[in-house]
Length: 233
Image (cartoon, rainbow, N blue to C red; front, side, top):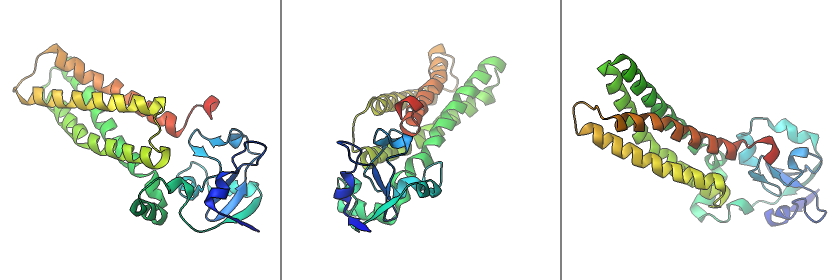
């Protein structure tokens, strides 16, 4: 069976009449007949000619889907092409821990989303029932969301660097803009609320409610990068 390097694998991208190859655990498969690989890019993020050992472990399907396609070779050991843009220390780490390529960001990003949406909910409950405990709960949730946000941003930037090579797509641009806006809102709201024992200004409540659409759009754009619409697959 043919042995190929990661550079040779990269050339099998479905262009100029070439087949579409991918690698998994050292085995090379021809997925040319898969409609999901017809454009050479699976789910808008997995390029053909890549070693998908780590990525498939995070996919919503198992590795059994690869058995539908012919095995055409084996991959020579070495640094995969998709990791060569990274420092050697990070290359070695990701080869030993493939899950680190994608999992850190999904593991932490849900915390600020949940805390900040709950913060908006409790401020609405306060406005309806005028119960001070709801407003205090909203403030504490805001603090928790502000603590979790930097971890989500840092891991998001790391994922962008590792998997997308810092390519500034529309979704990435929107996520960066919204993340900056979110941090500004969090800082202003925490300082504002901390400076007075009771808050009554309507702008404060409006900003608290706006947290929900901000994090919702952040989640939407992240979802589009991970699970794009079918027409963009």
